[in-house]
Image (spheres, rainbow over the protein chains, first blue to last red):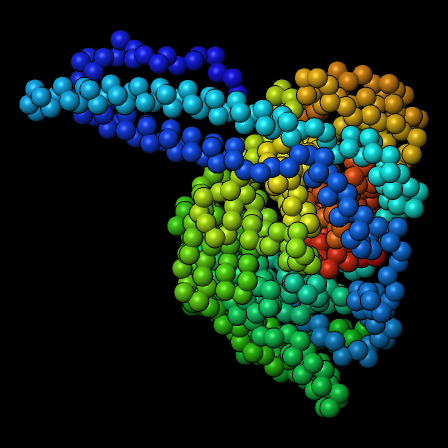
Length: 109
Length: 527
């Protein structure tokens, strides 16, 4: 983020303390401003210190995870046998039940 | 004030101003250093990385792992809601679904059988905006427009249902003779139960005018603790507490961290509640504008030495920022500014959805401009990859998963993301050999056509490996992306396409639940 206006290290003469009506108020405002800027700089220093990895390392980790985690929604992992697929089991159970099933279904009145 | 004090004040002011100027100077230096560091990290993006590594490229583009044949079949269509469905959530064991609608009802479904288990009727004044269920299936939270989270304690379903089944076998009774609980309109229920036993009606329901029943029950304004219906003897759900959030908005998201902690977002504020103590433990750092989405890390990954434990969550807000928080501290760890590479196309770029990938390191942010950006929390605010829905639509090759297209994605010296497309498509001969300049602005042109109410990406979900990204796009419906190749594999539910607004993937990765705006039903898809 480039800023076009670089601040001067000298005090602006146009804003001398003598010209402000309430120097105490100005002092309070400036202390608040100072604290906020100090805090922001501390946060920036913290982000600078953080150990970050480059994008290529992250991509490698992501590809590795995607390739090595079993995911039966993708055809390359094959099909899940019926014993392990509770949805297919439930579906077959409902289809073959012929009204003799004991499962509960409530109705909405 | 004496004259001496006055001159002291002036000196102090002078010193302070000097110090502030020094801090400004330091800030510029620090920002420049951070930018240099980020530039150094941004050495590639995901597609380039895959292209430039031939082994990985072969592995992914191998014909065996061609994802064009995504086999999802619709198993059930769950009918029962009378009004717009607000939220769909799976239980942690992937057995049950809990859904909330605008008719003040929370419905519980057995997703594997396609049957309704029970209904929770809320007060007429409570409009649920979000629903959450604790990992042990005992507590349900319903966050509503009045900025309150109502917590219910539920009976244990499985013990329930097995006891009912035992009764069936032992007593050999029909549904009709089961005593319903002390509801005032219980006489109406006996006729409808016969139809449940027929073959075709897995999801049958006789929808009498449920408004009448509500009015007769809630004659007093207190909660009807008996309003958990089952067609058998019941255990009353007890309302544990009502948590009221301090912000002045509504509860937009709620998630259980464990059975005693609840995370809610309301307005600009995210807070962590202790349920036993019934108060807020921690308020997290505010966003500048309202929080649009929340994502917690998934619990189902195997905790290895390199994986991050589940202490982090993400919140996104309308002013393009995503914040990463740790549950244990109020200040955010990282802040990501999700801007398009191109400032021109980022004018409508509110973030509407954010979601962790299953590996708990990466996350994606979807915007109102229908762009999805992939990030990694270990990399910082450098975007790893951008997925543009509008560009995919313009290229018209999404249906045909064409292996002949050669798309090259490069980063030029100005770090602009250029996309040179050689589209061998019969449909759109005009788009042959599109130059990159047009692509830069294609999102702009298409976004000008959108009306202001277009919410862009509504919801993002991932399959168990993270390879498949399911997104629901406003005015378009559900779409499945290949995360590593970057193309859209297919559109979900060609018959019902536009009507999909919400989606939820089961924690075991075997099923997907989608809603339908026009029919108010929920479709369960599985392999």
